[in-house]
Amino acid sequence: MPRIKKEPFFPPFEAKNLLPFRTWIGLVNRETLRGDAAAAFTNAAVVLPQAIAFAAIAGLPPQYGLYAAMVTPVIAAIFGSSWHLVSGPTTAISVVIFATLSNLHEPGSAEYIQAVLTITLLAGIFQLLMGLVHLGQLVSLVSHSVMVGFTAGAAILIALSQVSGFMGIKLPRPEEIDAFLAAIWRSLPDVDPYVFSIAFGTLVVTILSKRVWPRVPNYLVGLIFGGLLAYALDAQSHGVQFVQSVPTGVPQFAAPDFSLDSLRTLSSGAFALALIGLLEAVSIARAIALKSKQTLNSNQEIIGQGLSNIGGSFFSAYLGSGSFTRSALNYESGARTPMAALMAALFLFVILIAISPLIEYIPIPAMSGLIMLVAWKLIDFKEIKHILKSSVSETIIFIATFFSVVAINLEFAIYVGVILSLSIFLRRSMRPGLPINVPNEKVSGRPFMSPILWNLPECPQAVFARLQGSLYFGAVEFIEKEFRRMEEERPGQKHFGLMLDGAVGVDLAGADLLIQEAKRREARGGQLYIGVRYPPIRRQLARFHVPREIGRKHIFRRKTEMVPKLVANLDPKICATCTTRVFRECPPVPDFIGEDQAKDERAQEAPAAAEPAQDKELQLEPSLQSVKPEAEKA
Image (tube, rainbow, N blue to C red; front, top):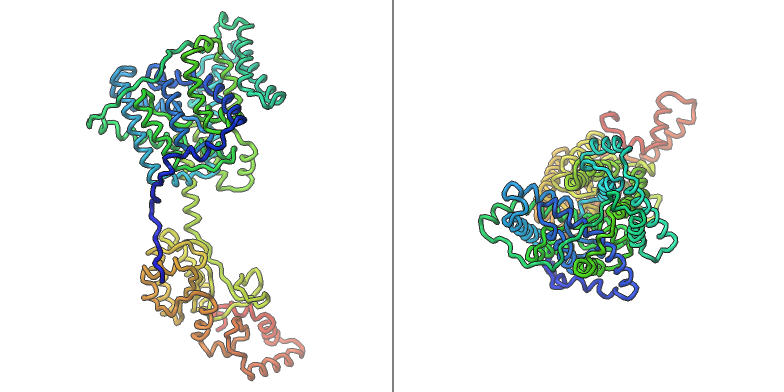
């Protein structure tokens, strides 16, 4: 017998993972480059003010946000898996970095900046290790409903974050939803007409240009229109804010702090940031992959994120992750390949070096209008409607994730979604199906089918069931209760044939349950018969000594081998009076029983009395008689 090679728990890392861009580089042509370039220029214009704002949130000078927006997406695009994900500084990571390091060093100081780069390096190493050991499979626990709810909730937050720039009023943070909505209501009379006109005009032109000129980058058209409208209205003299001039230059080389004290102090915060970054990046990549129909490699994406943060930490770039706004803008603007992310970084560099003065003519309200449209397109109303109509459990997951994003924060929402998805999965796996089956002589081959659905008689001494799921420790309690329920409802059916064909696997607790059930059946005068077709499950049973404990003669490969052995061990006295004859292997009905039945039939032709009527009912419906407990027969 050939030796079966065991599959390692962690698949080996292959050299081809070092060059993942080979899977998409062949798709690059003149047409894709045109779409990628348009999306890249729009993305570069949008990320410019965002990077400055995110750096301020993280307690860093503005150039560090720009460095993160240039270095991180390049490495992530080359070594990642998603074709549309754009990495870089994000709001959530910026906030967590500030909360983690502001108590250790003065924000903006040289020590603070070095600590930021060190924690970025550590987080990148953690992410890379997770990708190398294939922990990307854990992302499969994030169900589709989690992604839909997460995307919709993030879209709401993105839209709410732009209300201030859309209306020209100062508002609290959108995470404080009660205070935010109340502030909007109070500030409606104070809406700046110039700001609102530019933002609303940009939004309308962007939508119309997509319908009129579908091949033209509509976001870029809207951005140009917003700038021209601001110039026509002389908006700057009326207090409308524009993108400020930013420092120019290439990312500077900087070495993180490798001292043991620093690594020990920052390791716990780095691990938390690594998890948050991966959840954001992979979740966003999966959400966009659903729209683009791309097959995503989560492990490769994790590796790309880790390498991008490791490399970025040596070029003054602080921790980055996938950005919902820029990734969605990248996809909606017509990006076809990761070349869009590469060119966006290049365009950002060119903008900083060559045409930095022109950026000052882009009004902030125009970008708010664009981001509003991006947020709207992130909400998949069709899929939300489908979830609400099709599944109660998925609806609960969607609602919980959505409200966690809006009312709490993005990271906690992902945790909530994963926990709920895992809980529902475990609940289902802990309650496997155990349907009872009997041979159906009405169908060719006499397959085992449901006696209830097909109105089939059961053997009064034996019951057959098929386990539909894993026989593991989490399901043992439920399966044991089902065994006891079958025993109470069918006390006469002391022999039990259990098919494990549909079982995914058996562990030690499941094997112990089989052994105990065999002993229990034997003590009641019956036997347990196990049918196992697939060799992996037979090997599992052998590893846990099930054949040795219950006897190899009680384990079979097929039902055709099991049934003759089972029938041979039935009580011949009961078989002698049984008329159901469920199995082909059942002995023929004795002649004297047939004569008695004929006499009973002739007697029942007389005027009906109480007992003859009852006998007639038993004779006409033997299937009902076969399932009655022996106690009731007595």
